Length: 271
Image (cartoon, rainbow, N blue to C red):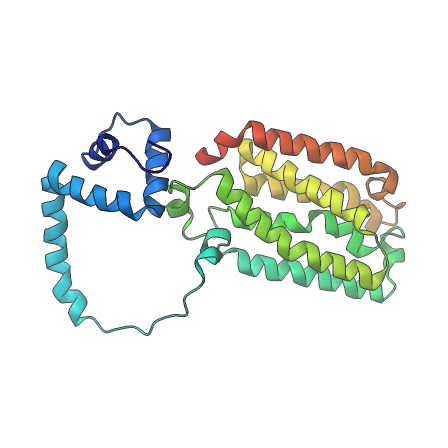
């Protein structure tokens, strides 16, 4: 492939269904075809010349479907979402984002009711803030929750770029809500939860390259609940992990998680 267009030889091989094309070349070509009308036009011509049987099959299917489509009842058009929404979000994320925001509101009410004494003196909002994004991150790349998972996973742009887009969209919703509620309650500073939250997110993505993002996010959230939230609920001391002098360790965890994601960036296309 050149810097701008695929070679005609590559397009001809693709049209014939050449099984010897390397996987990375095949994915690069399909990704390019999504955005290049010129190469799609050349592919259509190549199919006609290089794979006449396929072209005949498509024409036969079209001829059989056209009468049925013409006679079908026209459904009212739905409100079309902007293209960038489909590129950054998945419908499965919406209820999980709403649930995450609802949980932060419940924690805000607990803070306003002065119930922090029931959590070892720590703010309920501070206890859950580091792991809140993990719920929506888990839903953003879940086989069980996304009905179009197989379709999305088989596209040329699946893998780390799509996963990072969806993770960014989660953080763009959850973090401002936490910042606002932290400011309203005055019970926590951004430094206390923002760095741990980003560290947990990067660690979930890093572990996700091995065990899957959903399993990694759920496992980290469960570990936080068992070793931090539960002892605080039982009246233990204020969690050590949320003290300001622990921030360098959270920063190190964030750097390590980010490094693993970069080093294993090719593994995400096979999740």
